[in-house]
Picture 1 (cartoon, protein in one colour):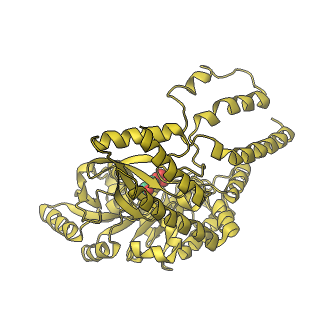
Picture 2: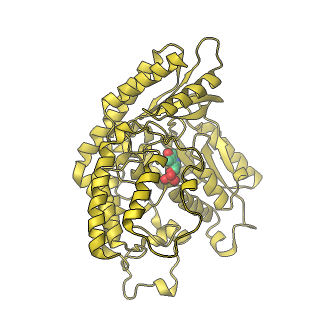
Picture 3: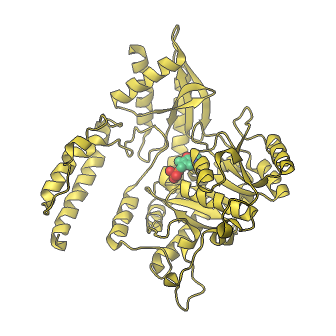
Length: 467
Ligand SMILES: *Cc1c(COP(=O)(O)O)cnc(C)c1O
């Protein structure tokens, strides 16, 4: 394709993008697609000769948008948000134009130094202490894996990366049952094994019980295990549970354990000072992860890990084969030594565009609105007949259940959720809480307005009266 053709198509795609956003409220939030719908429209074999962009684009319009769930829809109340914003979109267009490999300082000086500064801006924005450094990963799963590998190596005095983890002492990791499945996966990949990820009991507030944690560590040491680290959560995925970081840090400091705080979703809320009580003590943690690609508005992928001792992570993950040496430059940072993949995208640019465009005040206003509207929705749903709130709002997430007279609550709530999502005006998802099927409601899409939340409440009420 000629660059002149690219120019024309790029303009058409911008027009398409603007129309797509303007029309989002008219689309069903969750894709109505059935399994195989897209597959059946794609030829079985690749073309031998090139095709016109006009043909390709026509097929895109015909096949793709219908087959997508619209995460930027202002009535998306499912999962957690994965927000983009116009400034983030613009930055990503520039990133894909330059298309650089940002693995080393030398391969991308501006990207590397902007990453350093943006992590520093976010550190200040979240009210974290000056001694933290950080790096941008693709996802919280990767950041958590890096932290778990560092926990393992620290406990094994870095014998694992040399001789293999087998045959060393058996490290153990501690977390509450409210932590995300990415912790389980990290423990599998790290060769620690599910049996050595000990899920500590939670209290009535769904926070890990510090006494139970301390007792487990003590008994594991007595049995010959190597307690290595703790993963605490701020804003768990199911119902937004928060561990008491300060109490956990007291134990970790006494026991010499590494602490990783998973605030993938709720970390964004910490730009609002009044939310920081929910992670009091976080400044003492070794590692903290939060995803600006969720609630904040820097589109996927963008996950920041703050580190108190980056040198421990670099000792675990940093490799410098001859072909990656930067001759004559010892003072520079090569962020690929901080992360699992070597190749890296230029992820800091969208943060720069986003933060400068809205200012922290503009971003705070949205988060505060979301939190207030979630509270409003919780109160209104609590007042509807047959509905009960199963977990109160934490940040902007609560859960509820529908149990009308004479019907089984699991069956009724499931039927309600299916009917709501088939209707298409709003999108909600479920979780299991205390063994029950419950419906999650989170407010967080960047362009959600109060009317959208009002519509959601009305849709839930309307559908519950007719099924
Ligand atoms: C979303 C989420 C994750 C996983 O994030 P990815 O960036 O998709 O890996 C982990 N922990 C929590 C609490 C989350 O909300």
